Image: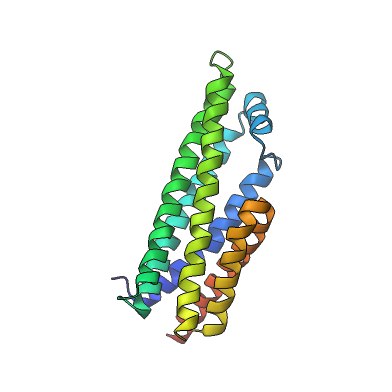
Length: 203
């Protein structure tokens, strides 16, 4: 088991990853549609240096996942909800890796005019779906763990309650408008970072 101080520092990695990924999206010109992304990759080689930036972000999310799992299970090793919630984070980070790989392959195909556009389009569609399911999995994990800790009055109940509320809003928002997920998940990661920093200072 990772010690308390290390797992607390790992909680900060999630918000850093969120910022890095947001910046990488801005560098792409904010283009998120499949057709727009294909056109962007076909007209520029910028994706070749943006993809490594996204890889850094996803590695940081893996660090966050390890820290989040250790932090949550420190409160209760026997709670089924906490175990389920931490497994959803693992699913989320796995799907994000799938999204990154398929997106990189799609951009590579799109930049090579000799390759069929249909294959690139399918890969980017796979990337988008993987990213969506991964995001929903992460948000649901925050809802489960935050809600359980709040109900059991463990840790800082007020902050855990905020995480749970943001998590469930992000899950529902992901089915309505992705921007809702982005805002709520980003704030939830900021709250997690605050929890981590507070714990490091206190310890």
